[in-house]
Image (cartoon, rainbow, N blue to C red; front, side):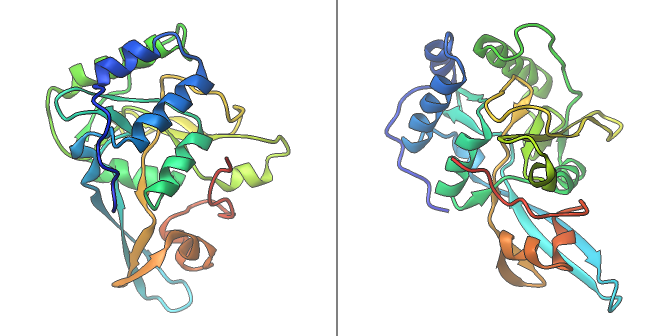
Amino acid sequence: MNWPERTSSLTGTDFYHHAFAMKWAERDSFVLKEIKAGNIPRFLKKFIAVNTSIIDSSTGKIIKATYYAAPDYLSVGTDNDWARINITPNAAQQIADSFHCFLPTRKMVDDIYKAAKVKLEPVPMFAFRDSTPTMWQHHLIIEGQRKDRRGLIAGIKKDVVISGKISSDPRKNRVAIYGWHKLDGKPIQTLYTGHINWWVDYSQGIRLIYRKIKVEGKWMDYMDVLKDTTLQKLLCDEEVCDFYRYNY
């Protein structure tokens, strides 16, 4: 993956000091500016292999695949001072496209949780959920839980996902969210499209997935996998898997 050269010196702490009073649109623009300036912690650039498999019902053959997921949710800053950020799916899609990535499905969120080395108990917050200070506070709470443990992390955010529920929802401009698994492996958030796409709160995170999937040793684009009636089950457990990306 080709990451942009870092031209911004803002740390994660700096980011939230600057963004303290921002609402969603201004915060989206600020995040896009920083990400395009290469302001991404180095550890986030080393994607983790997640293995999955299905049985082809017509042949009985086991089909194996591997995809590569970011070890944590989208963040800005340096390895010494970084912070997870919360943005709309439209801004997330811009970032995903620029890095040849996509957003996960519900099944992938479950698979990533199972594969995670670091699983933390979710911490719900109840006041000013869409405010930037609450987002910063939630990041600090997670870091207090993590205690410098390294590796693929899960259970700390609801994921913004791609889902066929968006295609079938009669309401326009939806965002799909899912996850926030408890330590028993059960998600707090079932697959949900009730929010309009500009709604962002502290609990929603963006996990990038590299768009090339290795299926039986052969690289395939994730869209081609999802459009294949057999192979799509490697990535998607919904009845209809026809939503591939958000618009911006």
